[in-house]
Image (tube, rainbow, N blue to C red; front, top):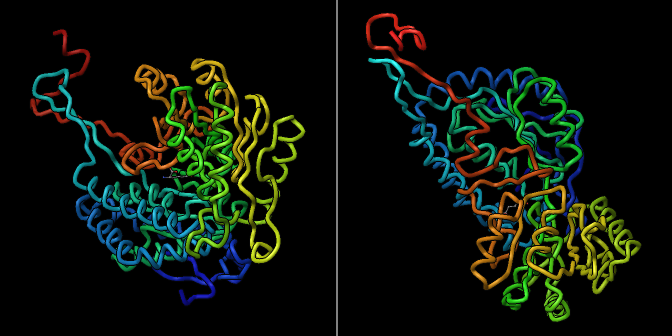
Length: 494
Ligand code: UN1
């Protein structure tokens, strides 16, 4: 990437903003680019452009709208390696995972492009003779998406692609920590021939750009992924304005390991979902609910597997765990380690910021394992967003399910067992939006609904065909071809 100063993308134009802030590579501490700090003025300008563009865009037949997404997918595919490296640079996740994230975006492009030929509605029998009834999806208008730094490109595609294929125009505020993916995706939209104004990228903070979006009368939907506190504020603000809002605010995801589990597999699943992306996934495993009879064995095997985790700059070969996003992230994890110790959980490994040599330049935290935690401890209830996992011993399958469901979040859960009855009970009783059997808690596929129950969100889903529900209105249409005025609910009895 050549640019050193990023620009907003508004109405198909690249617009510089005077105020900016620096963006750093979390692995090395090096400055990479400057990102605009926009304000209400830029949001207003973007919305004006989006309103005009949307009117035309909604009239373009959906299969043609989809053509643009096919091109977007193909361009992403061509640039996959380039994008992945930039993603590792700005976010820190290891290159292999960055490639996986870009691939999620490519998959989403092709999947949602397919929706351009479906966008199914329903025909329904009418109550009256010679009358036709149907329901169809209609675009909502201008929609706002606010995306996080931990999946800067995938989550943006989960939200923007369904919005676009359904005929909306988008105002997008990416996280200021990871603006490069947004910049690159905007360039791809431009190259793919998306009409100007259909997507507008406005960089800036939540307090300025985010607020301006949430309170803008002409932005009719806000789709947000991020922290619980911010999500609740957005929900309250949108509630007062009767604005549709879709929220995804994290998890406290558990892997359950039963006495009959394949322990080798369970260890792999835990290591991957707890320490991959340095635990900075909404779906990351941060609790292991383990049957007491296999607890010691599991502890030993986890400790052994943790020794193989090479930590460092994700652009280097063989690195399995990258850095934490920034100093604030590091300090939050440190606070939880102290809390865990005070609460009486036993620290088996890690628990410290990594220092010395290359570690001094970036933000690194040692993969951490607590054991003998109880389900009411704060380390077993609150989202830490780091490579920290706590073992909670239980005596029965029923207790395992209960402990899994004892948190305010409800995103993802997993169980390792060979008992088919337990499998079916677990998929029914685990109170999360995503359930895995004999796999870790991460790795959701884009054509299935992504989201959770309880405090994870407000009932909406990202990705999957369900994402279309966020960005469309259902419209009921009646066509009376009887040639006379038929009065529904009255004429029926005559
Ligand atoms: C997130 O952490 O918010 O299921 C998204 C997964 C990925 C997406 C995670 N496909 O872990």
